[in-house]
Structures are given as structure tokens and as C-alpha cells.
Length: 107
Image 1 (spheres, one colour):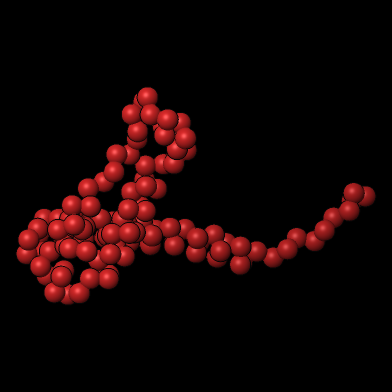
Image 2 (tube, one colour; image 1 turned 60 degrees about the vertical axis):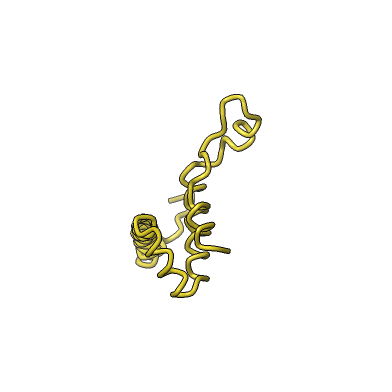
């Protein structure tokens, strides 16, 4: 795939179909940020498959697009790190718990 095609395919898909579209009701439960995250994951996968020469050529042809992608990847990484801290805190809270003795109805 040519780098120009990558740059052209980066444009996000419309996040919501037109009000009259049958797709609107069918996919109304899919959050726009989930779609963007999936697109960003595919973009990262494509970038990782490219050679350093291909990436250098893209940076030369369209440096602003490359910086936009870098910024998007950075934001995604920060969000993932925040989510990892959240799950770590929940696991840590559970790991410090000691079971309470079971009480009977007579007590």
C-alpha cells in the first residue's frame, strides 16, 4: 500500500449516519469514541508494518499529518496508562482485604 493511500485513508469515517439511514438505528449503540479507537488501532498497526524509509517519506510529504498521528497515539497512551492505574488500584484494594467471620442468624 502506498503511503499516499495511508494518508488518504486516515480521514475518519462519518461517526453517525444520516437520520434517515437504516444504519443509524442498527448501530446506535456503538459509541463514536469506540470507532475512533478502532481506527487509531488500525492506523498504529499499519504504521508499525512500514519501513523506516516509508515513514520518512510520509513525514517529508505530509509532516502535519505525522504530528497529528503522534499526538493521537500519545493521547491514547496516556488514557491507557490512566486506565491501567485504575485497574491496579482496584486490584490493590482487593488484595489488602481480609475476610470477615461469617455470622449466623442467631447472633
